Amino acid sequence: MTKKKDIVKLLLQGREVRPCKERGFGKAWANIAVCKYWGKRNEELNIPVTSSLSISLNGHGTETTVTPCSGNDEVSLAGRPIAPASQFGRGVAGFLNMFRPDANTFYRVETTNTIATAAGLASSASGFAALAMAVNDLYDWKLSGRELSIFARLGSGSACRSIFDGFVEWNAGASADGMDSFAEPLSVEWPDLRIGLVRVSTVPKTVSSRTAMKRTRRTSSLYEAWPVKVAHDMMLLKDAIGTGNFELFGQVAESNALAMHATMIGAWPPVLYWLPESVAVMRDIWRARDEGLRVYFTMDAGPNLKLLFLAEDEDAVKKYFPGVDVVTPFVKP
Ligand code: 2P0
Image (cartoon, rainbow, N blue to C red; front, side, top):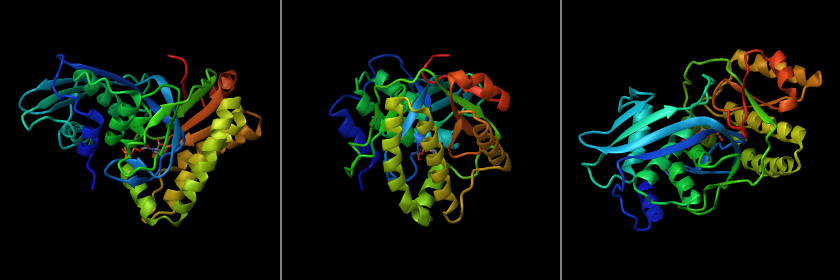
């Protein structure tokens, strides 16, 4: 079976793993998918079953520095040390192991989230994208965007999309080694697009998305409909983005998120990320829409909702959803 290390060797094509500078720096934005990544055809390499499409959140993400050090890896988040045995600590160590030149090379990884609000956007996507960029900077590898996207994908699938700004398409690819499974930016902007974060719970999830997508793929009879739905939704979304058709964009994004959740509700044991409050917000959105407001939602592997709307409706959206945090994905905050 092809290992992550083998892919890194392919990506580096003889480049050296020797620091050229004291430290490397990387910065990447969180992203929200409007057509979701749910299910892998290769779990080791994070190669997805389907393509996906996301929006990077300009200004909201992660900044990371990587410095070689001695003795042990040292990982910190916002200045606080992270335990090596924690999920975050193990994830970072696993990423470093892909290229660590020998057993005596260690790294200090200092990570800060630049997400302005406590809106629950901190994710592995911007984290692994920033880490991949920082390592590329430290070693002066000068990897292309495509190569960086594959490198980040090995840390976490959705991280491959956070390498780029704006609308980003992650092509599933067909090759066994995933060298054709990378993200690319779409050359379209939508400056009036707004994303509203509605946080219903801050409690950490009990099932990771990694576990949930694996279980869904293996046990949910509804999963076989998912790739068909994604192929159709990708086409509609690109059409909606290209023509600025917001209703079509919102409808397809909302339907795609609900279909993803349906596949996991159909898994065994079932995975249900929704809380009663999540459903209450969905009903509020549907009511607001019935009353003429152009607002849609998407949801990821958690109970919180992300509203999709246009700048002209921002005041109205804030009236319906007073606690909403508004992000401008195409305009730096
Ligand atoms: C997405 N999610 O497209 C989907 C929608 C969650 C729901 O990508 O196992 O952390 O590291 O490849 O990228 C979350 O999964 O999973 C995710 P791994 P990842 O944004």
